[in-house]
Length: 73
Figure (cartoon, rainbow, N blue to C red):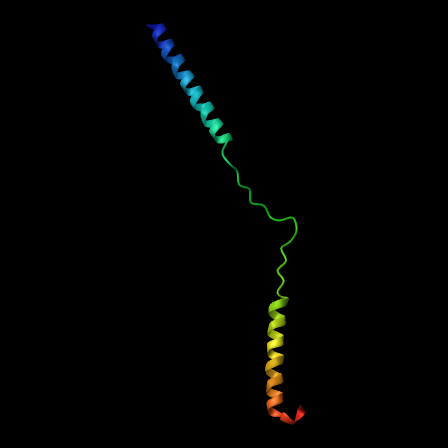
């Protein structure tokens, strides 16, 4: 009877080893995604918005001045 138990234990050990190796192999093949900060700082140029806003205010002021003083031109 001891021979039968040794055979069962041996089969369980083989199955456990196979499962462990399979899990490790599947885990090694999984893709990895790394999120890292850039090496240089991110620069956002906001000059365009400010430039457009300044031009709009100047144009509005010019229209008001021309309407108030039509003899300028």
